Structures are given as structure tokens and as C-alpha cells.
Length: 214
Image 1 (cartoon, rainbow, N blue to C red):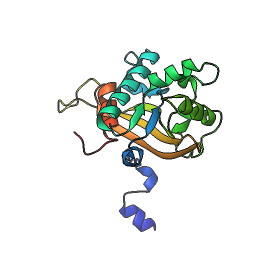
Image 2: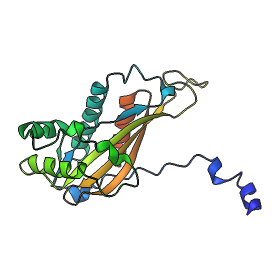
Image 3: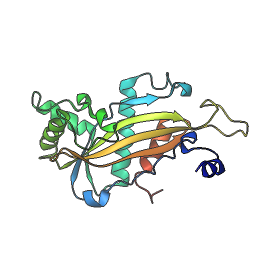
Image 4: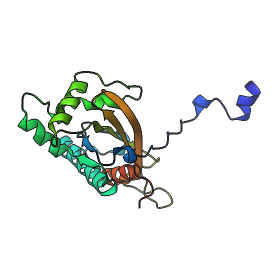
């Protein structure tokens, strides 16, 4: 075994794990159904990106992320009846005291890869919000659980490498599909996209959820 490891250049722990490929949205099974799209509540970036000023306004960054996701979902998967965050907020306001504020539901916990069963109170909050939305809601909720930006090169973003090419950052969008009746995560993936600014990278990440389209 030692000889085999030496021939491979070291143990597997010496190498950076290859990320799993992005799983496409299961739109065939969702066609014709209403699916609630929860608002994004977690955006983070590695310090080395120096995007403190770009993402300084947390509320604006979350709203921009919601806009990018919602616009592309409706344009690239129109067979699904997407209920976007603003529609969910209106439903929650109409039922104040009954439905939880979708921006305060703790949905970021679903970014945990090993989590299958949605814990309470999030489970009951998702079920109630779906029931109150869109004239009865639907069975599923799409949750963007976290948006993380990482450096994808050795040169600071916004500068050029020695070849003159801009160095990109990678957006990693953790997305889960929850069956709100069963309180169970039915599908999850991490969508990735590169860009030299947060929103170009996020746009490319979201587009990777619907492969086969330009």
C-alpha cells in the first residue's frame, strides 16, 4: 500500500477534494405545481476577496441575491409556479401572528449537508407559510440556504494575473427542496459559478441549475 500511495504522489488528504457536480433542478416533477421560494438569509465571503464594501449592506445584498434567483427561475423554469420571497412576505403580513416572517425563519440551518429531516420550529413554519400563500400554497419549498463566495485564484479579485486575465471568485449557492408536508429535504445541491463580481458569479451559479440553456 505504501508503494501504491507513493506512486500516486501522496495520500488523498494531501489533495483538495473535487466538489460534487451541481445537480439540476428537478423541474419535471415540479411542473404545474406551486413552489415557494424562501428568501436568502446568509451571504458570506472569504476575507481575501476584499468584498467588505461590496457586501457591506447586508439587506441590499440579500435582496439582490433574491432578485437574481427569482428572475432566473421564472425565466429558465417557467413550467413551475414559483412563489417568490415578496409574495411570501405579503402572505405572512396578511396573517400576522399566525405565519412567521420568512426573513426570520432560520432557513440557513438547511445548508448542513447531512440534514434530512427539517427540525421544528422551521418545519411547522414552512408548512404554515405554504398553506397561506398563493391560495393554498403547494407541497414544496425551494430554500437558498447559503451563498458563499470563495477565491478561485491566487491574485486578488479585481486585479489581473500575469497573463492579463482577470482572476475570478466562485459563488457557491446551497439550495434545498423541502417537502413541507413531510418536513423532509427531498433534494439538495451546491450551484457554482465564477465571476469577477458577486452578481455575475451568482448568475452563473443559478444558471447551472438548469443546464442545456444558454
